[in-house]
Image (tube, rainbow, N blue to C red; front, side):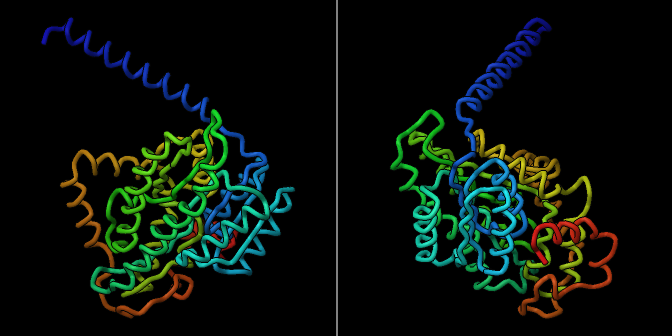
Length: 346
């Protein structure tokens, strides 16, 4: 290829990128919404990342419907969020129960208004080598991380589709998946399986609902410093598994602060974007998975070799907060411990 042809090819490529960027910016501005006065449901909004997003939305004037299983945590979150002068409806709800989900959504509609935005955030994390993962573990992960979101979406969609279609659309749905829904991570097999399902469903739903003015956004974060390891489930050598999980989730540069992550998610929802992978390591990993899956598979096998062997408590379960050791409570996990205090995880 001659130099002139190469130059023309580069020029056309740059022009194409410029047109795409301009079109994206135009669409983003057209779809931008103001959260003030909107009714927003956040599952798992009483602590962690869910609570961080609720704080931001409350500051922007959104009325909030929050569900979780723990009534005390819900009351703490409600008391804090009402200080922003917005309506806050809370309800203890097992999101794996379809009837409870439908009852919660209807109560939100009657109490603070039809749902404008749904954020499927609640989830469960089970950390275990494959040898100790049971069928029940897979079912629990699917019920919580996929089917709960599926039923929540089905409960709010009629409310969204019933309203008049405006320039900004009829509603927003944000599904918090994970980098683990792009790349299967060792010792998180049940989690990754459920998140892969959510990513596929969320992306497909986006394509089918956009014509109706409902914008579905898929969020795939990497490691977030929320303080949530305390409430995750650990099997096998639970103390070692917990220490490895908590330390990796505390590393600066490789993780993101939960407040910063929440801001990014809310902005993605504000502009109705299709997908956002959050943190640089997660973005690199997702690109590599698409371009060189064999390489990523080999790398994950190496990672697996560094993780604890099967054994310990076997198929029994222990929460992170019951698996603390001097290592998991050391200076290596300071950032996670501070996040746990800030985000109602303790």
